[in-house]
Image (tube, rainbow, N blue to C red):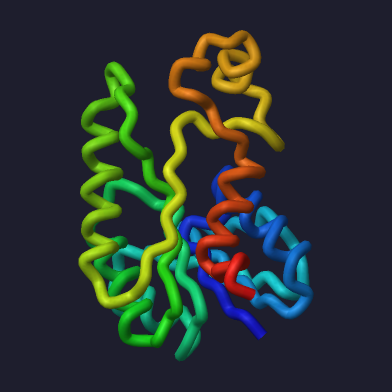
Length: 181
């Protein structure tokens, strides 16, 4: 049985990763954490845990003694990344999953791109393998907002946009090393 912790997993990309992992692995156990008491996907193999991942003691006590994978869908908090990396190292995780930004130029988003690059470097400096997927604008399932309209209109073709389904598939593949099976 595979156990994965999806930190911030109730968000847009996290929900798609949860859906796909449930379809791919009938024995998977997913622990989805969020600060709020959100239960976006109901399934007996999904446990929802309300915890602030920036609180090291609360994060540690809310999670199981071991997990195969820890995936972060968070950004902008060094404390959260320290707690994720620390948990993964302490509890023998095989990999930490991350969605990065890649080597793109996004006018007006330079600070965000720099932050995501620094987060990836921090995770890679740890002792646990990092499975990273670089993305730009993520669109697709469950998204019908101004961003999705901009993608459909071609306004963001220069980035290029990437579908949430592809991001989720690549992230799971890289975590479990699907090609090595």
